[in-house]
Length: 193
Image: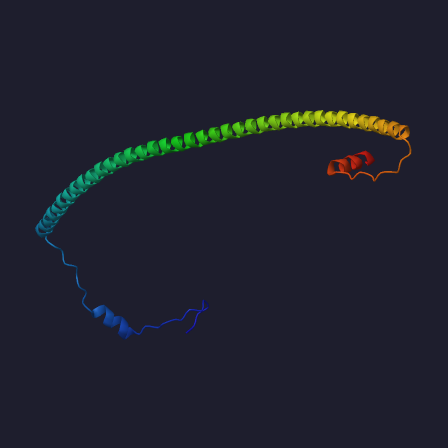
């Protein structure tokens, strides 16, 4: 039979109810207090043994932890000292490298300054040589100009002398013109130019 709430309804018969009532029920057995107390005492002793064992393990673990801590402290101190030594060594190396680099730079700058000074000195010497050469060239030109003027003057005098001699001589047969030497030909070229 169904009800309004949508749940199934079960109908128990009288036989089922009677059978269930006739079945004997087991009564829980009560343990005697002495047995229970003995079992609890035995369990307490077991627990005490466990506590003593665990305390021993804890003591052993603490000793191991203390030993490991001491080893770690020793390792830390050793590593700190090694690190400080390496840092000091590296700083010294870097300072040496820095000093060497600075010395190299200073030497390079000194070399550049020396080269610059040498170059300036060379330029000054070259300028002095050039001025000296220009003076020598000017003196040579002046001497050449004087020599040329003297030669021109000498040629004019010679021409005048030759003209007076030819006009004073009676008309004779014209002699063969003299052959010019190399010096004479050069002189003629010089006069033409």
